[in-house]
Image 1 (cartoon, rainbow, N blue to C red):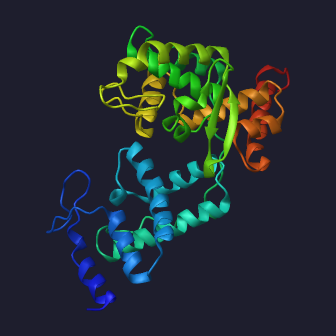
Image 2 (cartoon, rainbow, N blue to C red; image 1 turned 60 degrees about the vertical axis):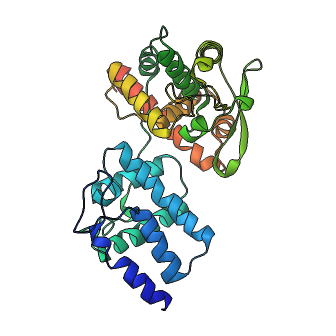
Image 3 (cartoon, rainbow, N blue to C red; image 1 turned 45 degrees about the vertical axis):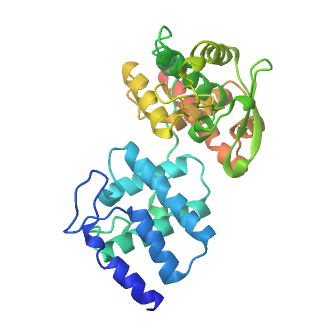
Length: 326
């Protein structure tokens, strides 16, 4: 039997794919995810190498994580969801070439799902990177930051941990992935420093201010030992209270949403908002752009320069508000 014949037979019955909620889309229930089915198609039909297949998986999983955070699923994604996803990628400073690659991969993925009748429409049909304008990132004011950071209850174990996470995000400008993968050996609290590993495992050292340092010391000395489960050693800094394992990105998204709502901050907020606010507040305070670039781990200073635009917008707002002829 030829490879092409095997692939055709293996993909003919995909119309019955069940979604993550357990519903069956068609007559047949299968257990494989849409991503796995697509990668099998690429491997058998196009003969892609393992490295290429893994790159496709990473790009599609970026979208999968994003839509899960917005309470939907890959097979229920609409065009508006994809536009928001690409816009948010632009706000993270992702290079244009990387965004083009991700969009191209998503087009292939959804065309495959459409062909196999797993989805009824292709949400990438009108998706074009040129049509997605790069917005200035959402930034919190210092008062909004203070309001959010005051919400975790320091009398509880969870509140003490959450306060340490929020303080760390704002103090260092770390990406959420850098927080979830943070290990004890990376912290040097006595010196007020943390070693972070960014994109491509590029290493950088970032200072930690005294307030965040105190919050981390309290969590590490009084709370983290309570979260470690017998027989389950881990060097992750931030632990799940029930399982004693490292935290997921989703957990951090959810706790930020929880405390933002509690603080009555109405802006759309994500872990990256703390990173944007960290950079903007430094530049507003007079920090050198190159130093901010180093702390953010940007390879190109043009990525960091977006925060000078944010700063100018802030200055214009102040001028309009307070100048007699503003």
